Length: 96
Image 1 (cartoon, rainbow, N blue to C red):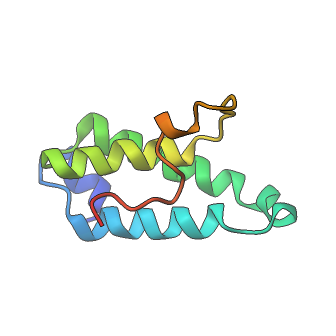
Image 2: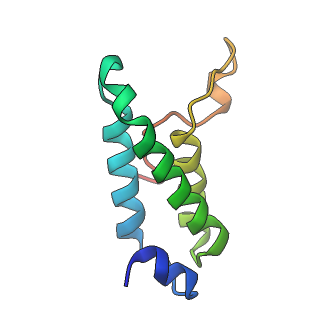
């Protein structure tokens, strides 16, 4: 049974799965600019998975913070000068 299916069944989300999502998201976001056109769909899928886990999964407070940070790192957005310190940096590890 997949981690997503387990989350829908009310089983706790494992830290190993969240680490996998963090690692792959960091790899996708780290590609050179000319390669990012090929990663957009994958990052959207990661965001959908993380959103599903947040909405339906059971997780500790610490993993919840990681999932929220991961969701933010999957969303490309522009930050005005001087505001960057208010937001988590993409690819930053939760609690690590």
